[in-house]
Amino acid sequence: MAGTRKHYLVYADGSCIGNPGRGGWGAVIIEEGEGERREINGHDPATTNNRMEILAAVEALRHTDPASSVVLRSDSQYLVHTMNKGWKRKANLDLWQQLDAEVARRHVQFEWVRGHGYDPLNDRADQLANLGSDRKIVD
Image (cartoon, rainbow, N blue to C red):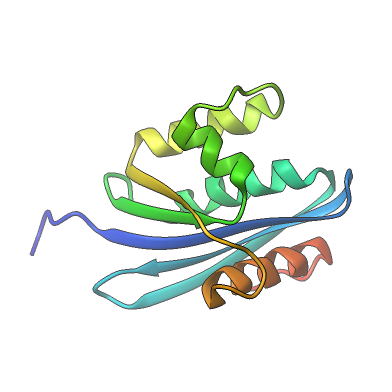
């Protein structure tokens, strides 16, 4: 039906080899109802893990439609608790500003998931982030 809000399930994760060091981010984006699944990732040659966690969420949201409804799952308590519980933002203010702008365009619910072996889609986001750290970008 035209005008119906799209719904997405997103898993986002960041990675850093050394902290700081070379980093990557990855996301699995599923458009619910359509069953369309996309995988994206990226690289930063000199960054921190926390920056990559935030950037994964920013980039994933940029790949969803404005005015959509998104459930964004992450194993980063830093990301999820900052968004849900209002943890004080002391660093990475540029990325928090970008994330706030993307969230303002959508209805986003942040959910924390246990990482590494507990959720296959979170594991895939982690793999994508690690590929990004190694400069291996998926199409």
